[in-house]
Image (cartoon, rainbow, N blue to C red):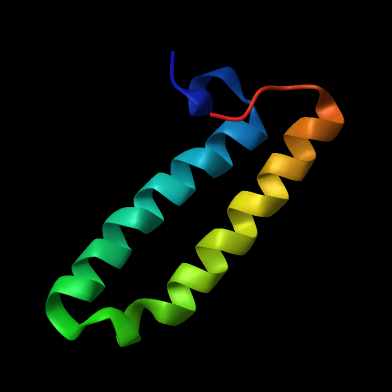
Length: 62
């Protein structure tokens, strides 16, 4: 069962981060690392925030 089917909002956000990684890879291939820096910074902040949320909820990070 996917996170979307289970309704777990934290797991859905991890799925969004995975999709964001695919976008980052495409940006890097097409335009270089510098073009991907803003999206990478956002991805890192989102991941850190999700780790904090999961820690508060007592869940393991994926």
